[in-house]
Length: 292
Image 1 (cartoon, rainbow, N blue to C red):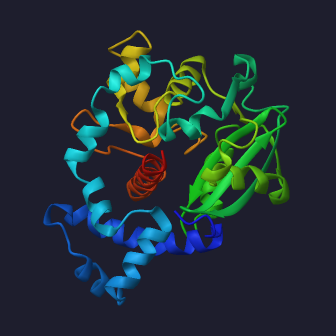
Image 2: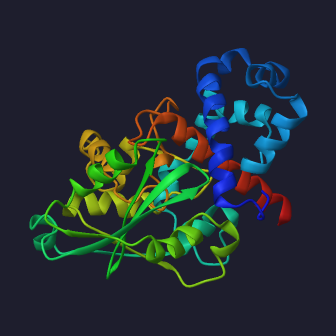
Image 3: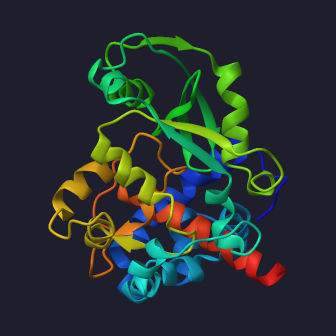
């Protein structure tokens, strides 16, 4: 992946990639050719190939392969043991780089029940490799990360504000710009102090979100495996609800939770974006494996 690609360029590229992913998601069984995709976009095959490689480090063909059910099942292989394995810094390879540099804490149950009362939350919108991103921060650390499709910024903000309606919100893009730059810059994950994040939710939700941080990049797990890891194998539905309410998308990788069959299931910010993130991560893992 080209480090020189700016977030504005990446966001622009994502819009074209997103349109193609919508098509690929519907037609992956037909294994559409590069020439067909290029024709649909009014681009040369070489141009479309370069765009995918620049954005994700994967060719359109590799992306199609990453969307297949066989690939999803491969991600799920040994998924239960993924959650039970201890990873040590420096020994876990490129698939864990992102998650190893996150440190987290939870707000007290009383703070959650107060619906954010007394909290000051700063927020800002920025470009990122997946379109527009909304980042929200308290004095304790990052508390929210959401995505927005074109023209949906206000809806995205209201969705997040509704989680903590009594908090005081301050628009402050200069403050949130730095964390966004770190979150979406793989070359910086291992170079700086861990990102500080704070969970504002129920005790059960917080336990689920903490478990999500154990899923390495390039792997996946299921709702039922998370429930089993938490000691209640019958709590899959409750786990699904908690995963759906994860307020810190991408950093807390709810996109790595799949259905038992390998299906993508739901994603609060859209299945196309979920596919895009998984494909982007696959490119990082592949690049890291080649460099190792």
